[in-house]
Structure formats: C-alpha cells, structure tokens
Amino acid sequence: MDQACIAAVLDKMDFKVFVLTAADGDRRNGQIVSWVMPATIVPQVPRLLVGVGRMTYTRELIEVSRKFALNLLGEDQWPWVPHFGFRSGRDVDKFATVPYKDGVTGSPLLPGVVGYVECQVRAALDAGAHLFYLADVLEGKLVSDREPLRLHQLSEVLPPEEVVTMRRLLEQDIPRHMSLL
Image (cartoon, rainbow, N blue to C red; front, side, top):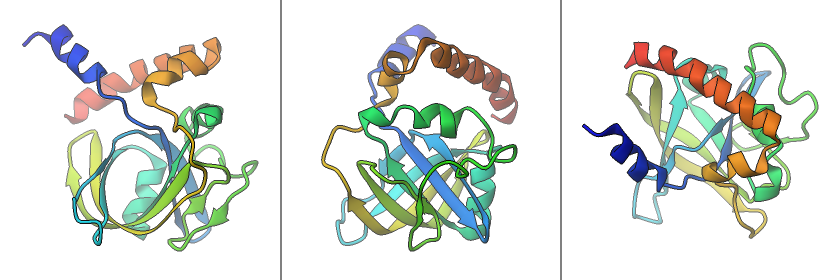
C-alpha cells in the first residue's frame, strides 16, 4: 500500500466545515466536524451520515439526547474553528460568549451561518475512533447563500499560530485514534 498515493487521492476531497452542536437539559456543547455526507437520494426523506470523535463531550450529549444540529460555517467564520475545535467542552462553556438560539431539537443554532440542519439519530456505526451517525433531518434553513468554509482552506485563513495549534492537536490525536482502530 502506497500511503503517499492514497493521501494524494484523499486530499482531493474537499469537505465543508460545520459546528456540530448538541444539548441535554442544561448541558450543551459544540465541536468542529467535516465528515458530513448526504445519506439518501430521496428528497422527501432527508438523511445525513455524520462522523463524530468517540472521545468528545459533544458525542456524549448526542448519545443521551439522540439529537444534534449542524451549523454550516461561511468562509468568514473561521474564528469559530479554534473556538469550537481547539478545546473541550468538559473544560469550558463554549457558548458563554457566543450568541445562539435553541433549535427544535434543543441543540444550539449559531447566528450568521450559511445554513443549519437539525437531526434525530436513526442509527450509529462504531468505527473505533469515531462514531458515524445516520440521522434524519427534522428541520433546516439556508440562512445566507454564500460560500461555505472548506476544510482545505483552514491552513490559509487561520492565523499562523492557530495553524500550529491545529496541527499539534491533530498530531496528539493520532496515537489515541490508532489505539481505538
């Protein structure tokens, strides 16, 4: 297996960046995700497949509530990547300084995003380091018809010190993820 060749192909995939939010009672959290794919071609039954890290606080909230929201970030909303992606909700209330409203699922909806969908978990696939949720879309809205932030843009739009932090955190995650695969 030529890992460089495989990496070159996988690098061509250009995923959009979302803040995945979930709540259970007065507990709420959000994290950055990019593994979001449509899971049906039937428009009357919209479904998504979403990958969520096994060790995240948001995943714990989803497991209890069985609901979540996906807030699609615009290109100008890159500052939310370090805010929601570089620290754990176990350590800090990520919504203490961020305005939001509760959606129909109780999950936080962020202002000014490109759009959002709210989902109910239908099934979960345990993939070791991640859980993949097959979810029915209950509600959604295109808030602003503009270009979404893409995963491959992060190294260009984040300040250099945040790129260093992002890479350090990803490198730290690799041994933990390898142990779960």
